[in-house]
Image 1 (tube, rainbow, N blue to C red):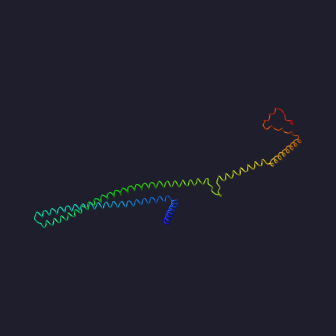
Image 2 (tube, rainbow, N blue to C red):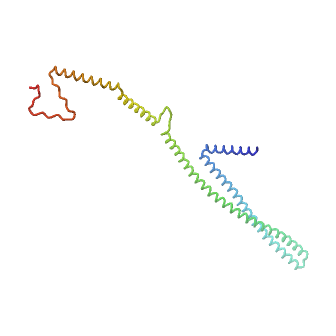
Length: 264
């Protein structure tokens, strides 16, 4: 049961994350990534500064311990010399006091030498850690600069992608259906061609129908009656019928001096 709940929770988390990434603005996400990288670099510099500061502090402690060691060494030597001088003078009490002081200085000298050795080891380790921290800051600084350069390239590529998407959308509207109120050019062309083809078909059918032939015969009869009436009128007026000209032959030239019939 608990495993099922965990699997369902992870699934829902992945689903929400996927939906968020689909709707999120890449420009905003890019700014977030760069801001996070800059924040990480700032934290790294702070940590490196602490490491370097520790190394500097260790060096100062080592130098102070070396100074104290040198001072203790001088004091111990001086105490030994003074004890020896007192012993030569035959002053046993003073010799014993100076000898005790020399032993105390010697004990402090031994402890200080141990402290100096520990501080040398710590200083060496701190120096190594400081060098590593400095190198890490330098490397991360180069990485950050690369990310900033990559940011500019990605922003430019994102702008180009948006313009290309707008161009693709504009090109798509040239061929897609735009709605019933505003038909496309292809729809209007198809409508006109269908109407023209239908008109041509109706005309051809009318030419083949019996009614059209009957109308053609009636028109021919009317033309014949009209020609007969014109012939009758010409006959009453004494006008000869004009010969029908050949459709393709040129009219012959009249001989000089020849008169037309019926003219003086």
